[in-house]
Length: 301
Image (cartoon, rainbow, N blue to C red; front, side, top):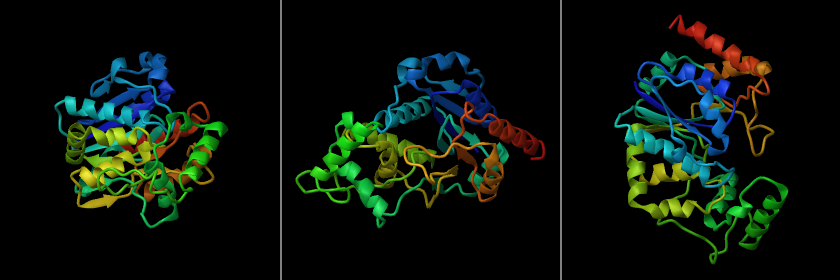
């Protein structure tokens, strides 16, 4: 089993080094994109075998809700393609993720379902899907795609003007060929052959990228739409392997602390292999505790 982890990070170098400690194993490779706004972080990452840190000139400054989030992922995927190596899976994670299971447990899980892809895809019959569809159907100025009250009001005014939250007047509605738009979590784990076919499609069809460059939060649709319309689709589509708690949250998921340890262990028992998100500045103890558990369990694998 060979996994290419592609990681987007922007803060907490000690936390990233602890994450790398548990990801780098046998034939795993890790490709690291460090946000260009966090250039000082680069010197604090411990360089080691099987770790590839993207050069500064191949990184981007990631801005919330804009195409730069997709750009960072594409830079990582291009690095995977350039490596000349082949993998079983390519797994997109954040530098604020952390494993719940040992590498051998992760291998066993993926090996048992080699014909699967792990990606959240929302049902097109839900009200939430219809609300998200608006993001793709109208051209959206990037000045309105950011956090903050003013940008939110501007964006909502534009949505109302073009037909409302759940509808778009035909005059404003955009399409990309005959594709069905799909939406879901930004974080996924896909078979390597699917990645190859997706990257080839993008190279041959630059209009797909241009279409998404004026969407709101394109990272929550770009890869789902690309994979299900133009990728080599796996036999089974499974939910993502990363546990994320969005309850009572809007723009960002819950940040776990030590009091969530029992719950995270319960999520591991339910089949989740990683969790998001953690912040050493908020609570380092939960990260150290999970690391200790992983080291102890690895000795018994």
